[in-house]
Length: 352
Ligand code: SF4
Image 1 (cartoon, rainbow, N blue to C red):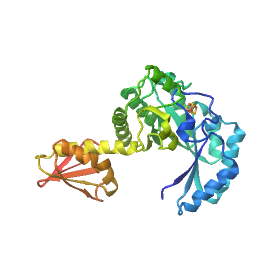
Image 2: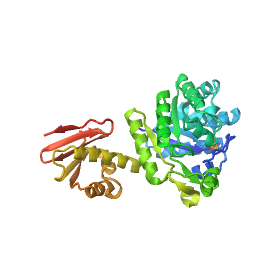
Image 3: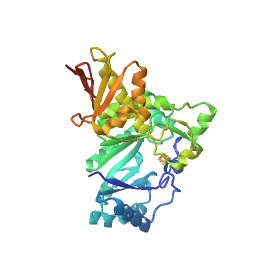
Image 4: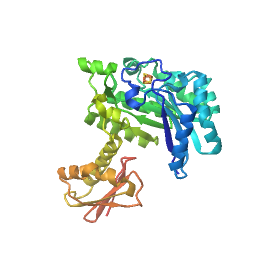
């Protein structure tokens, strides 16, 4: 049974930095005040009431949790402990900066019931980190991931492709390096230019050129393919849709309310095109099959993938749900031939 996350945003709290891209208030839609024990308990009870038996996970997102004074960290976590003991909450996750985790605070967090630590890695390229004003290098991220894993906790990495100085090659290398270091999952947030940030100033004066939506989707497609093929889940792509973001906070960059879905559609389009091209006669109408839960990603938003294939000269007879296929697989059939392939590898099997 999948867990439900009960989020608490602690924007900018504990953070001594001002990264060029960051306006935590716009990102989280939060005023930046810390919840007290009563608020935490009330929200957990609320979510428990509607969870229908699904386990809850409490997450302290935003800010730099481990840079908060220890007594504040303790107060926030202690408010969750009764729910951990009763089994209402199954785990706690916190997010923080890589350089705010030392050899002492990771075991302390583990002792407080924290099971997952998400790191704002952003890039594994030191020049990109410096241009973003992060104040730490890639070594700090490697050390933090190692400490988290040595203490038996799960490690997540947040990456921000498209920062100043980043290229598709450095973005892919950053992902490969955090996977090599042993992260359990990643989040990918292509850079957006938020009003009031240093990045907005650079964008305004023409010294920073953000990723367009199209370029960001293409890059995220490559990143998602790498992560899938290496067996590391991408648990989020693109900033969460939020009123404060829609309210003019975004000046430019790669943002779409359903970015992850767009990227998945792109991946399936490429796979289908490859499979159809492998058929002996791909000028004839084609039947597409995929796992039932992947129908919307295969068909595309407003049938965009089907329309695009048709514009590419391919006639689609129909799209079928086939529970025998695994999630990343698709099969296309035409005139007694079929070709089958997966997002996880490049081999195509053709049958008649
Ligand atoms: S460390 Fe995190 S919260 Fe602090 S300014 Fe940078 S991105 Fe924002």
